[in-house]
Each structure stands twice: as structure tokens, then as C-alpha cells.
Image (tube, rainbow, N blue to C red; front, side):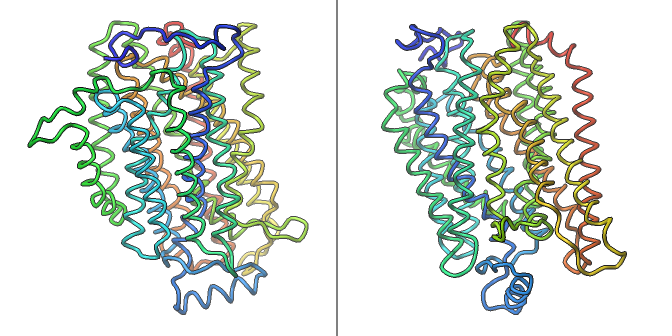
Length: 540
């Protein structure tokens, strides 16, 4: 069994560069940085177009003709035909997809810990996701749901294990670990920055633009990331290999070895996942069942560990609650924020109308710009012994999300306060409000997300890092389910027949409640942070 996946972690030998100076990072970090960057390019490229594609009317229908006339009358470029779903239905599918994307890492992380190793799991996931993205280029509803299922399953193998592999590159107690995760997180957001701009340009709009060009380019991005990882795997210096290569290929059932059985199981999951996305009202029940099983397993692991490890895992489980609350509201960016931006925001800059999908660039752009500042800030606060604890940073993350919703509510009121009751035409909301909302959410994200990824590798028992990382991503899955509920509140049944004033008022009312709830969560965690810090037993 390899040392990084055995019950007791043996510190990895530092690289030559790392021995010379604490500033340098293991060369394997840059392999994982670019592999993850291109994987996120594929994910966010498709995400930028997904709800718009689903909600765009079908080809050769009266609804599409009416849609084109309305867009042209408002001096807006009409998009190509889509699936013709209502905004409410599109949002439910989007969040069901997001729930599956972050539920499968529980399985992928466990399989990597026990059988596959991180490297092989990442390769299987990358191939599966690339196939899904390319199938998205086919204009067919059945293929559409099958493609989303493939991407979800592939992400389960890829996402938790590349994050866990970053942690394996550093010695136990290495002070560079947090900075390494911040660099890795910049890679995530560099991909998320490039994708909406490029895939959105190809997919959204009239003339030669086509949704499926954008989806296809997302698949190309995934292939680049996979090729980069395979070519550079030697720089990982032995980390992430299967716990037992012999066990992985030894036949156990009907002449089939565990690797073949895992692949067969993944293939068998495709129609089930596709059906779950199509009949997405059942996703919630499946998620709740999985969450109960995972919670039971984490408690089992905790009570089989010694006292310090048990307390640290308890802290992880508490943080999962507040991780969920943050992402439930943040993920409005891919659904209700998209439709709000498309309908009510003034998107013209110097006379040019920005594409709705391009607003997916704002958050990752801010991440790339602000992440180095946050990294330096945490390092400075560490030197002066004032660095906030992990729970305190999570509290700040939730408060940042709450402030963002406060800003967007103010923006809605700035519009609604200048129109007469019953008005059928609204002025557009100034662009600045949405930019400030994303700024607040980005600062919250930087307080919470990279800190959480690093914390998992430090607080988890060494024998279960991949499993706990997968469970961590399950909280984002639960958040997507909650986000779908929130998004549904903004566009209830019959919403399309409402007046513009009533529609914007509905967004404002829902966002106001959301802001108060997530702000309350942040304040609660802030009050409890001193007590929770003790559970970390010195882990910062």
C-alpha cells in the first residue's frame, strides 16, 4: 500500500526546489493547476450557456417567432432556438444537474481511496466528461440528458481526487499548503474566467453563432486538460497511485477485476442519472438518502479514530452546514441571476450590449485579481498571530454572500422606486449593482472555498482524505438542490404572464429573505467560532 493512502501518512520527500526555499512549490502543483484549469474551462463554458439554451424557444414554433420579435423590438440580439423549457423548469434541471455533479464525488473519492488511486480516477473522469461535452453538440433531447449524466459521473471521478492530490504534494505541517491551494484555486477560476467569454461568444447570439459550438469547445478544453495531466503525471513523484495495483486487476467476480466492474458500474449509472435529471423531482429524495448514509459513515470513521482526529472530523461536519448555506445562495449565479441579468439589467457598455453569458466571467475575474491579495493577507495575519480561525473565515464567507444580496435588492429598489404602479415598461437596472453583488460574493468565496479545500486535507484522517473530500463536495450538491428551490421562488408558476414591475418585485422580495437567512448563518457561526476552533487542535 502506498504511503499516502495508508493509515499513517508518511511525509512526502520535498522536491529539490522545495528544499532550497519555502517560496517554491512542488512541480506537480503546476500539472494539477493546468489540468484543473482546463477541466473548469469545460465545466463553466457549458454552464454559461446551459439555462439560456434550455429556456430559448424551440425551432419553428410560434413562441420562437414571438421571442425573436420581442428581442429585436428591445434592440437585443435573439439567440438560436433551444429546448423550449420554461425558466422555472430550466432552473430546476440546472440545479438537479449541479446536485448530481457534486454528489458523485462521494463515490469517486471512496473508490480512489480504496482501489483506483487518485491518478487513475482523474483519467477516467476526464475521459467521461469529454465524451459528455461532445455529445452536447447533438441537437436531441435524449442525448442532452445523457450528456449531462456523463459529465456528472465523470466529475465524480475527477473533482475530489485532483483536489486531494494537491494536498498529497506537501509534507504534513508544511506551511506552503494553504498557499498551494490558493494557487490551485486560481487555476480553477482562470478556467472559469476564459470559458464564458469564449464559449459564450460562440454559443450565444444570432448569425453564425450556435449553442452547440460553445458546448463543443467545452469538450475540447476537457481534452486539453486530460492530455496535460497524462503527459505530466511523472512530476507527481509517485503520489496518487492505486493502493494495490495487483488487487485492482485481480479477477473477483465472473472473471472480472475491480477496474472492469467499476467501469461497468459507471456505464450502468448513465441511464439512471439521465432519468433523474429528466424527472428531477426525485433527485432530492436520492440526495437526502445519500446524505444520511454519508453522515453515518463519517460518524463511523470519527468514532474509530483517536480523540484529536475525531474532534477534527466533527469540525469538518459542522463546517459542511455553513459550506452548504453559502453555495446555496451563491449558485443563483447560474440560474436566477442569469435570467435577472438577461431581462432587467442594463448590459450596454459604450453602446455595445454585453452577452448575458459573459457575466459568468465577473466572479472568476475577481478571484484571479483578489486571490493573491487574500493569500498575502492571510500570511501577514499569520506572522502577527492574528489570522482568523477556519470557522471565522467561513462566517465571513456567509456574511459576504448576504451583503451581495443586499446590494442587488437596493438595485431593484432603485428601479422600482422610479416607476408608477401598474407600469408595463421598466428602466434597466444599472450595471454597477450586479458588479458590486459579484464583488461581495467573491470576497465571501475567497474566505471560504480555498480555505475549505485546504482544511479538508489537514483535518481529515489520512486513510479517508478522498472520501471526506467527496463528502465535502456533496454539500455543494445539497446546496444546488436548495438553490433550485430558491430560484424556483423567483419565477413561480405563471411568472411569464406577470408585469415587469411584478417580476422585479418578486426577485427583490425573495433575495431580501435569502440575504437575511445567510447573514444570520454567518452571525451564528461567528458567535460559535471560538468554541469550534478548539476542535481543530491547533490546525490553522
